[in-house]
Length: 152
Image (tube, rainbow, N blue to C red):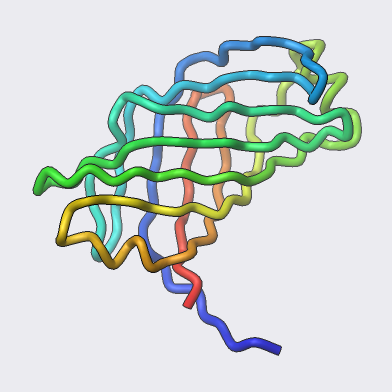
């Protein structure tokens, strides 16, 4: 058994455009959610989510949605931090068929593993972390929110 600890790093909220639904492709249903903005709040990291990036979301035939997210955080002192992660949101066993019919849940729980990269000297410590995040997307409000933890 390995010893570990989760330290709360920051929370964030981002707003999204309505999804760009590509539709069924060989891997599943592709839908892209583009970021329009947001905010980051934490003890050591604060800032805004720039209106760039998004989630290249794929709903597999088993109803599991896989996330592929890239976004940029801008801190008050001008640092740009690349936030990227993969994760899952389980739409249920019939999630694929429901998604095809446009029957989306109001909210969907998300579990991800974020990484952060920057050239700014004040935030080099972020690049030494592996993170774990729990959150949810509110599809009616086009908003996603997370609590991000550093695994120590």
